[in-house]
Image 1 (cartoon, one colour):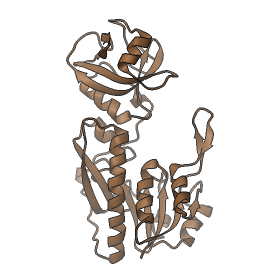
Image 2 (cartoon, helix red, strand yellow):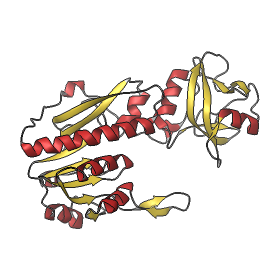
Image 3 (cartoon, rainbow, N blue to C red):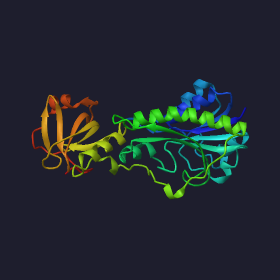
Image 4 (cartoon, helix red, strand yellow):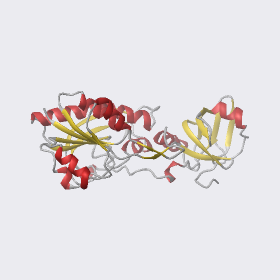
Length: 314
């Protein structure tokens, strides 16, 4: 039986924590990032890992850092055989990675060496990939560069957005991670070095990445909507206000980029640089998510009216 110290801060961390808690191994400590402001009132909100750890009855800390101080001491005193990291949110130095007896293990949401970095789920959709997966690696000080322990592939459905794809990868990864820990404890898992020549990268999306550029092909805009859904969601501007786009589809059509080609009971069709984008679900500023026909009935967009293509409209 291995003693596990678990580091995670995202909702996609939770399935892995639950899988390890239900395994034959001992989760000796859970570390997650401290509460941060969230929501309209900027109320201090704990990570989703906190409630999961409390429900499971696991020892929990929420340090500002595990690199030094109380956070590091908590990890050291837990005497981990395996240090498990799933979307924790802090780059770990050698001093932390050297704590576990067997290995520091990271679950990454891609088939490494593809899509190293902070946003592999979103970038897989942006890049138009038809399959991705999950990888467990023995961590080193590089960015997702450690040798591969286990991998599992997952198909990407045309209806997937980052939320649905990430949820499936989190569930798949939880099973893979539990198997990884079991095999490390049994001593029958041999790491395989990554081929750096095949590496691609998945940097975090910026606020500017959220905006739909109507001069781009509709196929590209459709991928962006999926990559940003359901949160924070792709955005455009309608009559000067932000309009979030949650679901869309590619259609034939042509016109001035960003202009309304059709607006009726069937929805809303917008001209792109190539073809047109049908808006299926949107969120006007300050309003709930709604279907495109609901939006058309409420806001009466006019044929030829243009949607903004960036943060400042236009």
